[in-house]
Image (cartoon, rainbow, N blue to C red):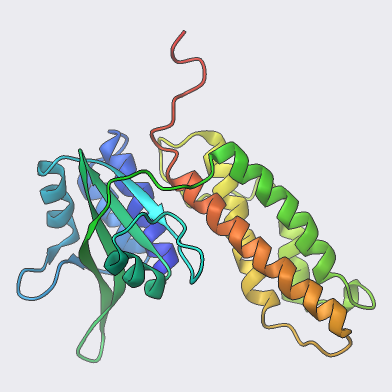
Length: 255
């Protein structure tokens, strides 16, 4: 949940900030990913629509995605309290407000027996730019990791040893025209392509981690585990680079 809703917030929030959609459309698209959403804690919580509007009044210029894991604070620059909360959640957004920033960390918001939404808890955050790859670099790393992981996943007696859902997911990687683009209007075509491929590979990682180890040697299991770890890291970097590219210069625009 956390990864998907953070991607939606950053992608559609940036589409709003760049004038490609209105605030109402952006919020509707964000809430499609995980239901109703609020910002802040009781008793000062506000709707996502109000929260984004307040941030805009406060100087909101961009939203950045963070997809950290223990030992890999991808997209984070501190302080430690925000980093810890984001790492525990596995995702966060950073609202850039001029010379300062605010961190937004998602969690499930349950009220009663049927209501399920998302609460964005706010944290002080550093405005320093994070050490994340460019879109071009993330694209290259993703392609390399995909090849290594595919080889490791097929390191069984034959292709029939791979569960059908993983085989189907691997075949889907070869179809560039599926149209499964998780980003919003206004992003460059390369960002849409990279984000779509990363999304499919994320599914492969999730499925492969559930694979049975029977029939594999200790070396094959080690190689597969390492390949999946590297692939997941490449997927997270690709998603961060794609979502954070909304304000990248357009080639040729300065001529």
